Image 1 (cartoon, helix red, strand yellow):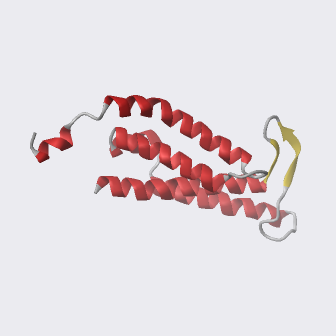
Image 2 (cartoon, one colour; image 1 turned 120 degrees about the vertical axis):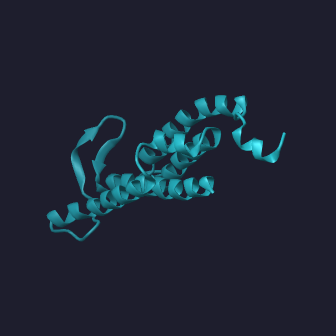
Image 3 (cartoon, one colour; image 1 turned 120 degrees about the horizontal axis):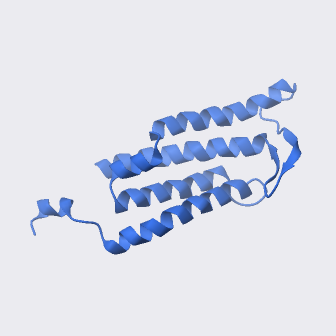
Amino acid sequence: MKPAEKDNTIPSLILLTATRYLVPVLLLFSLFLLTRGHNEPGGGFVGGLVAGAAFALYGIAHTVHDARRLLRFPPRVLIGIGLLVAVGSGLFSLFYRRPFMTGIWSVVEVPVIGKVGTPGIFDIGVFITVLGMVLQIVFELMEE
C-alpha cells in the first residue's frame, strides 16, 4: 500500500467499538468529577479535561469533523460561555453587598447534589472553559 493511500483507510474495528463504549462512560465520569469536586478532589478543571479526552478519543476513532459535529458548538464559543458563567457566578455576591466571588448558597437542597451555590456555578464555568480550551488545541493539532 502506498503512503498516500493510508489516509483513506478504515479505522480499527477495535478502536471504533471501544470508542462507542468509552465516550459515554468518560462523559458521565466527567460529570461525576464536576459535581463531586466542591467538597472532595475533582471539580470543573479535572472534569473538563476528562470530557475533552472523550471528544478527542472520538475524533481519533472517527474524524475531527465528526467530533466537531458531536460537540455541536465550536470550542471558541464554549470558551466564551464558560468564562461568562464563571465571572457571572462572582457577580451574585455583589447583589448581596458582599465582596466579589463570595460564596452564596441556596436554601433549598437538591437531591444527590445538596445545596447549590455560586462555587458550583463557578465550577461549571471552569468545566466549560477547560473543555473548550482542550478541544480547541486538540482539534487544531488533529487537523494538521
